[in-house]
Length: 416
Ligand SMILES: Cc1cc2nc3c(=O)[nH]c(=O)nc-3n(C[C@H](O)[C@H](O)[C@H](O)COP(=O)(O)O)c2cc1C
Image (cartoon, rainbow, N blue to C red; front, side):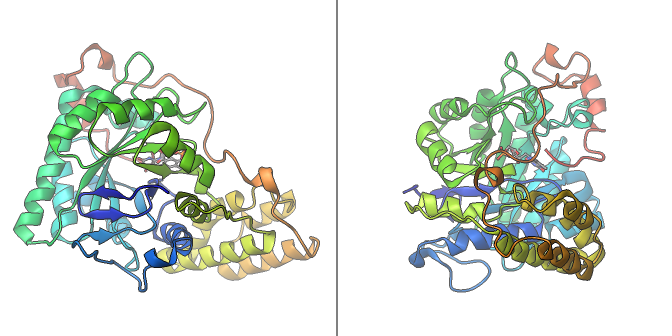
């Protein structure tokens, strides 16, 4: 049995978190994942109604874990970009509104936090310092940023102070904890995570997530879980481990082998939102696992399509669904022609028709394909030298040229 996790007023009975994933973890996908997680809860923990649930101690219950938004850039939020505002308007059925922010400027990050807290849009704010995308790191943002200790510290302090003062000013009942998500460092010679943890604790950060890869590793190779254990030993903050959880058993193994307080799951649930049922079951000591046959997967695809159409409108929603369909069908012997047709659907009616045509060509029973639908999925690739501003690694403190570049590090960003 995994121990519950407390992050400020959040009482997380099952210590699992859906990782923020740009282009993936919108409200529809979060809802699917959360519902799977909640269905696998022991009866006593299963909430009886939708929406936020207050605990006896006055905290906010997250019985089946946290489900974090895609990252939102602080500048776009502060400028009240319509698309960005739509991203932070969470599903009213959500238990805890966890929003991830990406920013490179302390004042802008503080302003974004103030908006989320004073306008009652979030219960938890996560800061992203792990994005390895070259166009971001080249300007000193994302995974490059923690190398500059002064800037990292300033952003974390600004976010925590903005949250605390906005809670006080608005008289909100509960604190809005600020957490940090980061990588091991730039590369093996430029580790940053232990320094970052020290600065985070001093800044009042409530918990740390470590994606146990360097920026250089991108998504390649294996996550180094032993580094999660190192972080756990080095800090008194709650540590959430992240990287390469593909099954319920992997989640329990990460807790056991690293001693971390919770796990964060990204690519493993792409096309498999039921992974949260497996993880919740495993964390509550039960052996059942989800092994859907093709008809069960088709039913989830249709449900996901309807959720997306309601969230984004039918046109955008069905287009968004296409990538998920590829992930859902991974390992199922449905044939290339059916996949290609599904990639072209542009309405729910076309989706249903294409799924029906695919189904007609297949045998009456198409069982769960086993290993072909399990294990690693999603982004992988090979290690690449991180693109950094000239001279970035010469000093762990910001110089004037770095500041100028950073101003551009928040434009056109998506994903981490
Ligand atoms: C498509 C995609 C988008 C991502 N977007 C974000 C993001 O917005 N913020 C973030 O902190 N990490 C982001 N990540 C990184 C994940 O949160 C996670 O740290 C990483 O995938 C490793 O976990 P995993 O092995 O469980 O996938 C993204 C990853 C993927 C694959």
